[in-house]
Image (cartoon, rainbow, N blue to C red; front, side, top):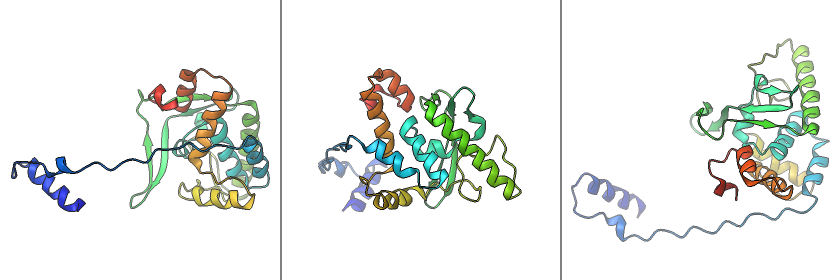
Length: 218
């Protein structure tokens, strides 16, 4: 049993037994991961379906498709790191929900490949402008102020989007629009596919995705 093996391993580490029993235990086989095959029109169909959805979900998922950012990186994005004049976003922290601990905000190491400046396609810059105008409009109706330190992605009442709500919403969204069942991570993989089909050099793609190793991108 796993608990017995773990207990025996601790005894071996404390030199209370002469042999580590875990050495005789065969490691389980890891099933081979088969990347999903995306239909040729999935990006177009996904974008079309998003047009009828709430603004905050639309801009968040469009950002996933066209920047390849991790979900936690977008949840951690603040307005001070959104430069619409130059069409870039700067990724420097993550914000995620951890069961038993709540929402955790973590600054990324300054020497980590995940800290990066990402250029936005022109279509996305226009969406960000419209989205920010909507955020300001809602804030004014509610008597709130939007500062540069505020998180960019908020819900219908101007509060930061809860990181734990996206997964369930996406499943309902795909079912509602008869789309291939996708996860937030699939959209990041989709962006990598877009970069590959556009023949973007793999090192450039790896840097944009925030991968520590080019082999991960490949």
